[in-house]
Image 1 (cartoon, one colour):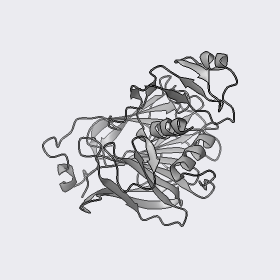
Image 2 (tube, rainbow, N blue to C red):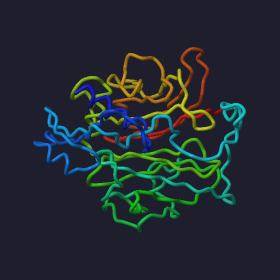
Image 3 (cartoon, rainbow, N blue to C red):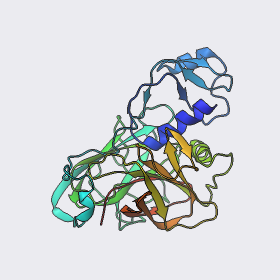
Image 4 (tube, rainbow, N blue to C red):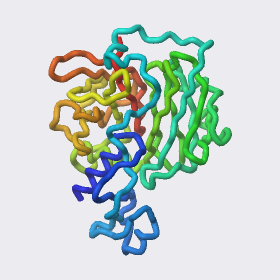
Length: 323
């Protein structure tokens, strides 16, 4: 069971699909029993060949996992000499005459495949309720996300990707609506200077609740009805993860808990990030909150971002050096 928990939270918190080696992988399902026989696991494919005693499919071969050494977005750096230099520069002002390409790739947390039955829209940071979604988002055509969802939703392409042309200095978020997956928000902060690609896992509500409980270290500890789950990445100007960073937030709630992902295991004991720069908060109250990253040893501020947290939703954002 410990192996399952370690692998599961490690996959989620990394946020990027890549090839990584490992001796044993676990295929997590939100249902009570994933399998009753080895044959059922073999039918899944991808090397899953046995049903464990706790009714979970396991594989003894190397599996596609999340490469925790990879950055969560790509694009050329403009500060290679000093990886923190961009934090001393003014934030770029939006320029509609200069365009950059923005791409996001969604992956189903359970099976590692592009998700189905998903609607996505792109919204500006200043438009927190997405009253005016961006109309340059391209995927597999516009879709109806329901009467109460609003407009601007597009289905991902068959490979799970969507693309958009946005202005230089754009800052905003992708919003996922689905009858299958939990509400998912991915912020593009800080303002974009270059063409960028984000990789994002999406989870079913039961999976989200389960992983939040893992981060808290006990069952039924995540109060999803009135709280959200926020994942944070500490990155330098070159999108490389930073070690020794801690996070704070203006959000206040007696149930709120800071956690870090240390060696792919959630920890509420450690006080800063390891070399992969991952952490977050569980049981964050809804609302606009500022999240700040600083180096734990020196208290030197790295940067901050302000995002809207929604109840029952998973929100992901990277914090890079900023003024």
